[in-house]
Amino acid sequence: MVILEIDKISKSFASVVANKEISFSLNQGEILALLGENGAGKTTLMNILFGQYSADSGQIKAWGKILPANSTDAALKVGIGMVHQHFTLAENMTVLENVMLGTQSLFSLRSDTRAARAKITRICQTMGLSIAVDSYVSDLAIGERQRVEILKALYRDAKILILDEPTAVLTPQEVEGLFEMLRNMQKSGLSVIIISHKLDEILAISQSIVVLRQGEQVAKISTSSVDRGELAELIVGKKVLQPITHQLPPGEPVLHLKDVNLFKDSKGKYQLKNINLILHERQIIGIAGVSGNGQRELAEVISGILKINSGSFEILQRDCRSLSIKQLRKLKVARIPEDRHSAGIVGDMSVWENLMLEDLGADPCWSWGFWIKRAAAKTRAEQLIKKFDIRCANMQMPAKLLSGGNIQKLILARNFQLEPKLVLANQPVRGLDEGAISFVHQQLIDAKAGGSGVLLISEDLDELLRLCDYVQVMHNGELSKAYPREALTPKLLGILMSGGQLDTTDTPQILSSGSQINAV
Image (cartoon, rainbow, N blue to C red):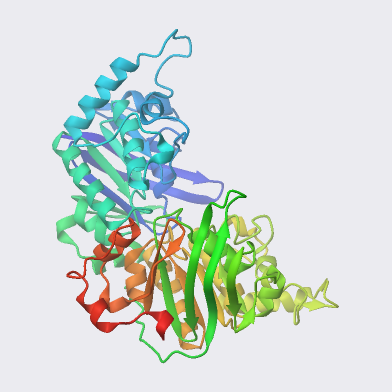
């Protein structure tokens, strides 16, 4: 039974066509994946469906009736709910309070928590959800918080659920739990539209796939009729080759952290506790972990933003505990920040200006340390734009108008043209499409082959197992020993990420190899 019809939806922003005559339908109890490159128009289309944007032309029908344009209230009333990638929960409130928030009139004299609790119980029993409604959100794990977001939508009687990158911050075990929950919901008649760049997961959970490319719909196919390679080719428009990495003989240490501690406050609460890590030339070490377990603090220590309280911190065998960010930069440290938009670029500055930010005051683009040689800077910008395939209208355009993938290419170009000895890559492919992911991965592999040491912080376990020589796991501010890549699986990493210990019967390769990077 068709419950949703998207009919020739078009939307433009000035001269940019975001959606062009997109049409597809959704059946009751169907899980449909919406895929495409960064900037392909997926989010715009879902914002139109959810009433946050108004289409220039076309219409949407829900249960045979035209859905009013530009009205989130109308979307909610007909049973369309959306769970965004970044959660919007009040941490100092309980699950019950978060779910009820905004569902009752401001003029109500009291909150009917008994009826709300009964409704939540019915939903949980029907959909296979398991949530402690009296727990505070601040005490919940990431996967539990996501279930609360889904429960919020179901509490509002959602019959069509839009999920935007739902597995981006989940462990493999939490992903399995989410998929089991979605299958239970599917049996109860719920329909789901899921946006994701993780193709293996899409192939595992969806029944049909819609692919957008540059605002146009290029495919509506059954999931069972396509494999991963074919799907990647549909998304990008050409065959996507996965970069191949090889283990190389390690060189001199480029980064050494020994017994590093970082305190959060005067009470001695740890952000980082007894961190030990050695990274050599021609190595990639991966740092796995669920978001919020100390990865950001570790990156900020290495970048010079945070100063450690105790322990030793060396880059190229030089004590870096008191060095400034500028001094660390002179040691040829390349930094790919976690948030490419707020920390990676100055959005209102032009592309060519952003390309020279890492070497402020240095030749060949600067004179006397403060005077910009505009001709030289623009010549180099042209070379980097071509070499790193930065797709922009021109180098004068504001960097904030670039797509996510092209912003990441700009950051890579700016850093790698200085031939770094240490590369700190923090979530370098988060939110990127298959083509951009392949490009970024190749740059990291090339840096390793050129003699750099690469520290790759990522929540994407497939990425870590594909690129890294060794992987360490962060949990509650502590870092595990380093395990060789060939001894690990996503399941084993998931156990460590959730704070568990590896069963010796499950890890014979690890135990027999005796390999850990600190012993190299």
